Amino acid sequence: MAIAPSLPAALQRNTAALTAGLIGVGWLALYGPLYVEFSQHAWRREENGHIPFMMAIAIAIAWSRLRSGGFSMGSAGALSGGLAVLCCGLGFYAVGRAGEIDILSSSSQTVVAAGVAIALFGVRGAARLWFPLFLSLYLIIWPGWLIDEATAPLKLFVSSTVSTSLYAMGWPVAHSGAIIAVGQYELLVADACSGLNSLIALTAVGAVYLYALKRTSIVANAVVVASLVPIAIMANVVRVGLLVLVTHYFGYDAGQSFLHETAGLLMFAIALGLVFAIDSAAGLFWGRKP
Image 1 (cartoon, helix red, strand yellow):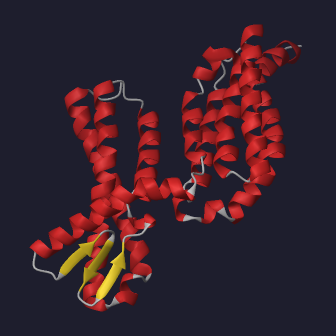
Image 2 (image 1 turned 90 degrees about the vertical axis):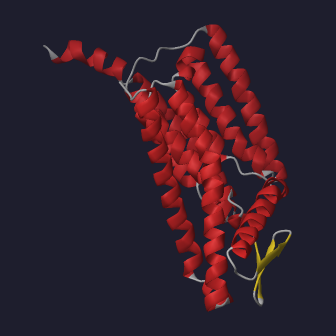
């Protein structure tokens, strides 16, 4: 007799999770073919290598929030507004798929997810899912020309800083634009070495870290966020400098060998350690999490 009364309560507690499961099925039906195409092309490029991991994190956090309960169905007005946002997202998706415009089809994920959340749970319920919606912005695939424009100043800064610093320390290093000359070798500071990938990865990890830490001090969070960009750029400057020295002493092939990726992973680990150190210092001055 005790089982029957508890059944409706259990169903009510799991309504959001069951709804999420149904949404997941529809989501895979809509975006599954697109993900297959992305996994064969766009996601294999270095600047997009973070996307599958960020997608997994966003899904896990959204599922955790839905499982925690507290969501209620939105009003009729929220349903209408959510459906309007959903239609916009589906329009982005349709145009992106028809024209093979990756930035439209990939950015439609954020709009579609926001529309579904508003339609089901209202604006207040969607606000509880703000962080996975924010992480969905990391799933956008930007066009190559825009990446070139964004990385051009970074490449110039990295090449100039590396060549000037090493020359001041006595090494025969010079640069012309994004090309660094060391001895008989010339190295191009490519997009992957400009710091953009490190910047994207570091901001993503930093955002997840701050969300998990749930520090209440706005100042402490702002200090950590403000440190992400200079740390990522300077870590990449050190990485390129190390590769220039490896090339100078051991040849071009050595600089482009596994040491290239190893240096990148090492500098990212050091950069992440610096972020944690700055967060700890900020916590001492502006309060730790409750």
